[in-house]
Length: 228
Picture 1 (cartoon, rainbow, N blue to C red):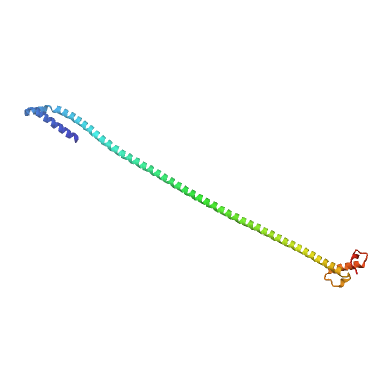
Picture 2 (picture 1 turned 90 degrees about the vertical axis):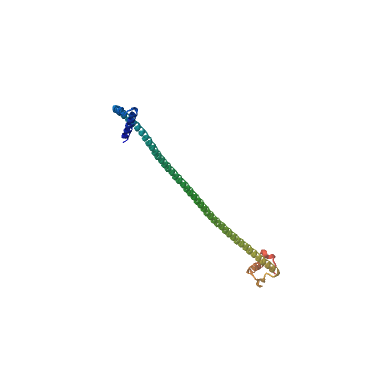
């Protein structure tokens, strides 16, 4: 359709040019008739030239449009892909950082809990050890106090026994001294034959008997006593 329109336009233009160049109608008709072949050739050449030009223009325009469209589409696709990849990378980095932060916080919390539990366990062990040490100390103190008290009691009992023994010995010595004094007093005051006068102790009687026997034996060492 495009070529037909071009040929028609060129033919009409050539016919008008030849008609205007001739003064009378017959001459114009002859001129038109004689130049028809040349005009046809020129018309074909013009059509070919115009077609080539139109094709070139159309191809250039189409190429430019296609290139522009393709570039735009490619740019849009590339931008979209780049944006999508950048978003995906940013999301992955964000997720990785979030996971790292969560892991770090979790590890920190776990470490804090572990340290707190360890400190509490050490405190409990120390408290138990202190309590055990206190109980052992109290038990040893009580044992020492009991031993000391036993020693004190034993020492007191021994002191009492010693005092009692001393008192008993002193009492025996005092009684013997009293008896001896009484015997000496009575022997000096009475005749040796006074054994039947009722002296109060058996020891006095035996002593008096000894004196009596001594007086009966003039050779005895007791002859110096008053045997009258």
